[in-house]
Image (cartoon, rainbow, N blue to C red; front, side, top):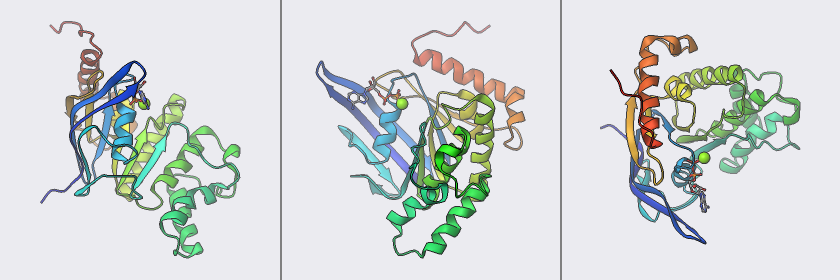
Length: 264
Ligand code: ADP
Ligand code: MG
């Protein structure tokens, strides 16, 4: 039996605004099998962040259902990890104490030394050994994002939801983090939903890339990523990746209501 970790079924949602309802999602269906990495791209303002809030149980859709691990999502869940563009680390805590935070909430009976061992193990995996006693402001933006990634998965959530987590980083730091993210999943598999506006990021990290239409968003196109060879950044420069990126770019242009240049 294949198990789908996330099932978004016919979800429709509109925000109430002073000018009347603003339809944001319409009959959206998304399925993410257990262990898969689902990247979501779409025009700005189409409803991507709304989608993450629905999966996290932070809001309920007007119509349709969100299922996680065979359970209907009715409210916030501890089994979801989240990471955002702004790492939101607590400045009065060290990096180690920040990473441990979810364990204090989810596993209060876990011995302190076990919590610390778990956090240190993850910090080592993302290359932050030796920085555990620093404060967030002593780290670079990329290092803070690595730490926030550790915090998001320290309690082994069923799913990690990331909303443009690498958007504020420079291009080289971003590529480093893609590789870290990939290597981390090899060692510690988890299901992931990543919202991004970077098509290369979606192809590098995604098992599938979902292109959402303009608002109200629905699924416009799904790309099954067949990454050539190992997932290393160099692979992005192969003809296979160029083709996938070209397809995605075309679909985004259609989603934005712009017609792509006529293909010969
Ligand atoms: P995206 O992440 O794709 O840029 P969002 O999901 O953040 O889009 O928002 C989709 C649309 O809904 C946008 O036009 C946004 O301004 C609007 N919106 C988002 N949150 C609210 C809210 N709480 N109330 C009213 N409108 C909202
Ligand atoms: Mg957004």
